Length: 129
Image (tube, helix red, strand yellow):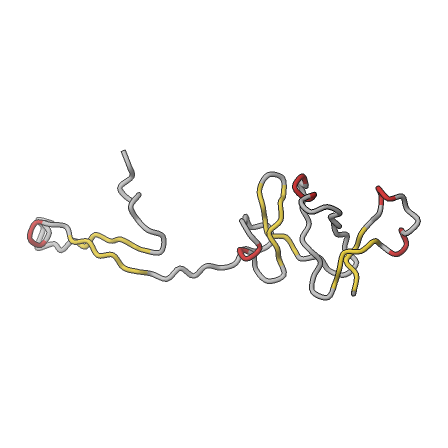
């Protein structure tokens, strides 16, 4: 059996207005009057660690990235922080702990002191253009 409140729409409040006369608690004309009041939803953007679906769900300075099998708001990377450089389009699909992208004015490039490292162990960091 569906819940009594299953027909409610997000952002609406439904109230049953009961007018009582004396102690008999009857309603005007014997009917319950229902008033639906529109209310504004003040949606706050997700903070670090909040569950999200896309980066627009997160506050400024955060992006929506995979963490195990869900997605949470994580900080956008700053200069010097390790980043993930994707060689092929779609190669990030298997990441369990996804990182955010580098912040504005930064790009994910091989760390300067690791140029001699083997191809498979190159460390990438967010660096100024």
